[in-house]
Image 1: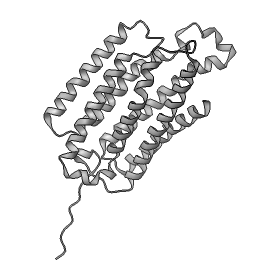
Image 2 (image 1 turned 180 degrees about the vertical axis):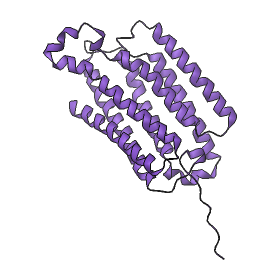
Image 3 (image 1 turned 180 degrees about the horizontal axis):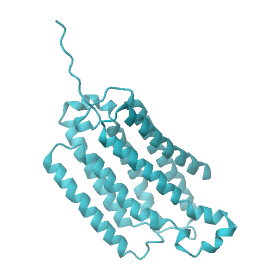
Image 4 (image 1 turned 90 degrees about the horizontal axis):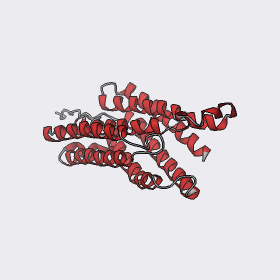
Length: 246
């Protein structure tokens, strides 16, 4: 279990490094520059999220077991809202259709407000994840990616999709949430005292899903940094017209 966590943590850090490498090669790509900043924020959140494990493994800190520091739900519940809103905004940045952009903008605002209010009135804020926020976040993300794919199908940039960081991110984040959503739902009803077997399964599958996610990010940043850039719907691709030979 610990080795999987270490691998995930290292891959998160490497994804930030790969993102920095990419934006140094393509400094005008605002979309993926913001994604890199978000990945750095994710690493910072993961570091703070280690506090319960540090308390558990250090007897001198066991007096904190009865405090909020012995859980990290208070940290990840708000971050879930930030994460889904950030990814939705990331895909919105590529949209050219004004109606799609406006719809997604309104939905992001509604999601943030409704999810924040839900956390405010949530009794288990310090003890479990908000299933409502997770479900609504996944729905928002799927809609944002659907808008992104729809515009890809309407545009010639589809031919250059293998050079788009955003395309690889869209595939990886969809697969990650398809794998994770059932685990999040069942985790609401199971814990260490009810089913230790499920908790172990949850941990292994979730870590593997994270490994696949960040490996895809690292590959996308490095691979796409070496090729010609495209902008438009792909977000990170730019066409260069070739003059005909006389």
